[in-house]
Length: 469
Image (cartoon, rainbow, N blue to C red; front, top):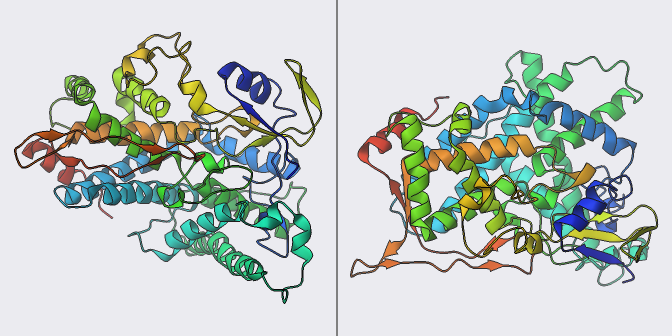
């Protein structure tokens, strides 16, 4: 296909190019199925924008709202969503088909959290139309980057008349374009209506809509168009393959085997469950730390407790290293000018990927890398895994994501026991944790486990802390 690709297998190489030379390694590779106006017409989606002024404007707004100081205002929202999740998990305890049900609840929790953060919109259940449309559009987007759509390899195909046999993919593109417009417009218009009524929840969009934009260099219409795309980009994730919903994992995307969706978190939560079920001594140590700090079944953890729970942070870092959610580093960067690195000539337009899987298995950085060992991060010289990308394309929501990871993981450890299933003789059946490592986003294959409250007091603690509408 004529596309040059460079894969960076070490943390040093990724830092040298994607961080230190980010001025020329922050572009994106073109996917005509997404960008062509006659097809999906989504060239203004932030995750696909080239490194240009529009991307910089969107990034500036994201950074203003998601930096460590600003994101604190949404901690209560994250806490509520974590506690709502506990209530839903409690109802799943003891039911069959637990893996798929728990995966679904993790996905809904992350989607609901993002809709509230961005639009102030609270989906009541997982069939909510705004939630479903937003999710479907993201799935369509990731499918549109697939090499299966030959137009991504041969852009001239976009000009082939619709009546030519074999162009059904163009009808698919038009259908997806309509779904995209609905997903982008509906929550935006809902928030505008709520503001007009004076009945709205504080969110990024509600605040931006009330700001004075008279100094903007864009027209009112262009401002609104860009703001709609900014909001949907936040929902999906600017570094979108890093932020996958489990529903999206079956798709293969342009340029390599990879997938896409909205959130590293849903995948990381599944990895956390896998780690706890197969490492009960680690789970017990984490629960002992929580009990010693906040008490046994006395209250649920808050973000204010995080500094007193170092083992929980170490455990979270190890989850992200042990089963990295984006093993090949998320959507590829592209080099915007010719460069030379370690004697290699890297041409303008080259696709550049960071091999996070290889970095997480680097024995120089991580001793015995296949073993799940949170205590490795007690050593300040051990570097955290690169779970949120690099350089100017690094996920702007890192601090928000880390807060959600802490709240969900610490809350689940406080209240639940994650256990192996037992056979008819009462013997534990330790599951084999397997993933599809040929995909850019890790897919964990279903495994059996049990989730139950640690005690009757913990069951009541969950029920007493479910947020009321």
